Length: 188
Image 1 (cartoon, rainbow, N blue to C red):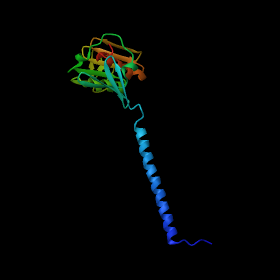
Image 2: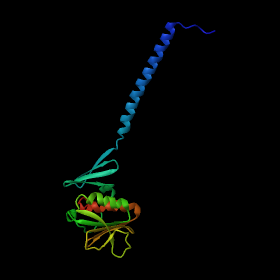
Image 3: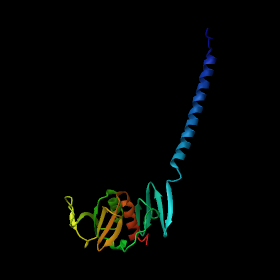
């Protein structure tokens, strides 16, 4: 037989259950707040390196640096790229100029557009003379500011007004960043 419960027993059990539920909810709130705090601080959300007197701030998968009055953004920092040899025009020669670009890598092209677009008058798609061009591309030679990014044997050089950035597809962004570091005088 079942024991008959009095109103006092029923109220006591109800109060006990309310206290248990309240304690569980409070613990859940405290633990979720602590978890969120640890999740948002993973220790690597922002890094800073100093390279040749320039402070690079790494955040959200990009490296940012202030050069003059412009902030430039890169996929790699200078410690992650090779120092390229050769004579290249400095960033001043790109100010208020039309820059032409031909690229077999959308990511490397984006890196050029994002950074040189801050100083150039405009950046236009073009095609080197002697190559079949997509429709809408103008043909240009090295008498213009022309950056040509292609998959080929690794080589970064300037010949007259043409800059050639060549390498494996997986290395084109790294080589593009190395070129940009060179013209910004970050890598001398």
